Amino acid sequence: MLYSCLFRRKFECCARLSSPRNALLAIAILSVAVYSTMTALRTGSAAPAKKLTVLREVFRNVSRTASAPRHVSASPVADAKAQRSSQNGSVSDGKDSPVLEAILARFKSRVATAVHSRRVVNTHPFGYIHNAPEACTSRSIEIMFGVPSRIDSFTQRHTIRQTWGQYAADPNNKAVLLFFLGRTRDKGIQERVKSEAQKHGDIVQETFIDAYRNLSLKSIALVKWASLYCQESTFVLKADDDMYINVHRLLSKLRTQFEKGPLFIMGTLHPDSKPFRTKGHKWFMPPSEYRQKKYPNYVSGTAYAMTTTAAMRLYVESFYVRSLFLEDVYLTGILADKASVPRVSESEFSAQKIDPTGCNFKGRISGHRNSPEEIRKIHVELFDPDLRCKK
Image (tube, rainbow, N blue to C red; front, top):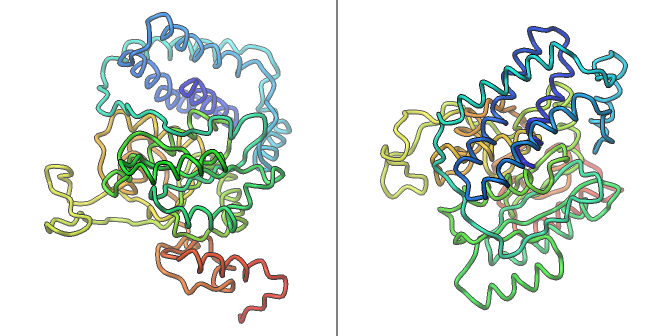
């Protein structure tokens, strides 16, 4: 399902292109999805018959997308996109295109011959202790809020649910809020997590150990979940549990950027950063793990947002690229480079500590290192109808 959806999303992008040359280039990009599908099927543990069924579904979805009318959109952005496409005649009228079918046939053949050229290095063998697989079903979702959280941060999660995360509690807002956790050997804490998951239904807990060095696994769990269970959403937010998020400003920026293209990661950009080579440093990176002198451009892991298509691309690419414990460098830098996902610098994201007042967050998307009390203070002030701020 994941890989067919990836193929389908890329195919929809082609409908927006006006020239045959651009269409051919876009079709070439589609190879990533089907190519990844076939590689994953080749290395996976599923029975051959099941693998064949999945592979057939990939190409069936391609054909279905080419001839079927557009589905009901999950957001105002998608509504506008569909309307413009209809007006300029770029949406298929249901008739098959011989040129397109010829391109797809050639494409399928090339993917089949190239499938053995990549090797899976990360199998992601972790299962779910707690999951919320139905969170995005039966309703349209514009944005998924994903919060990687330390397993014992019960107060932080409760605070988010009652402040900026409340946006997801209103079904009219087309949003879902989920917290991503690893496991613990502490039976008392695990029992509390079990009760929390049963009460709120927003806990996604995988079987890797909950530890700082496993932050990349949490972020992979986040894009994995979006890819498997929330494919039809438009955006994905990743935010630490000490962040305050101004949701309305976030969505405004995302919708505007989406008009320029459906594939991007947005956040505080770190260009030309160098690895720390001093032993004992919190972010020490030995040459044996990363030998290049500079990291790819990446965005701060404190909070960043992306299109769901970008999240799916990152998840697929993570199978083929050795993991680093620096999750922002790994996901938004290395994997984004491999998956050709653009990074967009947005100054309203902040990785710094901001004085926790409503006025300071009125023109910002995020701020870092906030206590639960500070998050509540910001939220109350920001939504105070009598708030007056100095210009």
